[in-house]
Amino acid sequence: CEIHLATPKKRNMRAVLQRVSSASVTVNGAIVSSINQGICVLLGIANDDTQEDMDYMVKKILNVRVFADEAGEKWWQRSVKDAGLEVLCVSQFTLYGSTTKGYKPDFHNSMKSESSKEMYAAFLEQMKREYVEDRIKDGIFGAMMQVNIVNEGPVTLELDSRKFEYVDKMEGKKTKSDNKKKKQDEEKRT
Image (cartoon, rainbow, N blue to C red; front, top):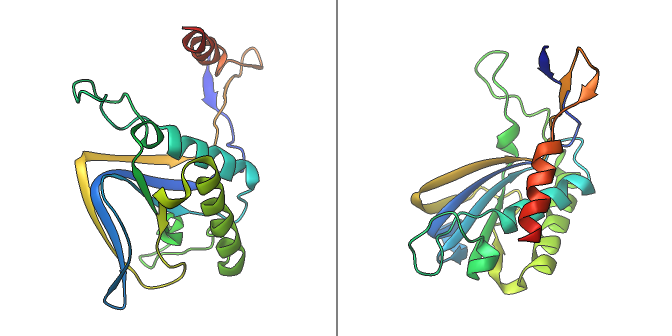
């Protein structure tokens, strides 16, 4: 019985999330935003990203468990929300840079600037609504920025809103998340 990766759905907003001791954004020699302990998120928006991608990414960023418990003994127990820490978001179209043809990066998969600016602003607003407004910081969209990150751990995660489904070619049935969903439902009950 062969299992193959099906064609991914078009949702594919990307983020690089880093657990940080501190992070800041400097533009033209001046610090425009900074956080203490928390997470720094470099966000890439693709041509075909939708509200669904944004919903997925906001939920994932705010709830992924990259911090230890309150006693500092067990890792991977608390999210940035659970710990009440800060988030620094930086728009980064270069996450979609492709070098498959030559050595010069091609950014044709990145959403165009004006549309991307609107979606990024909506992303920040949603982050603020779903967490605490003054704990969400960001750089300046489209500016040349210096991002200073003191990575803690180091912990760096690559997040992608794209969902893959495994398809059993022999049976023609989806076999992906039945067990995963059962496990999540059991965890919710306990």
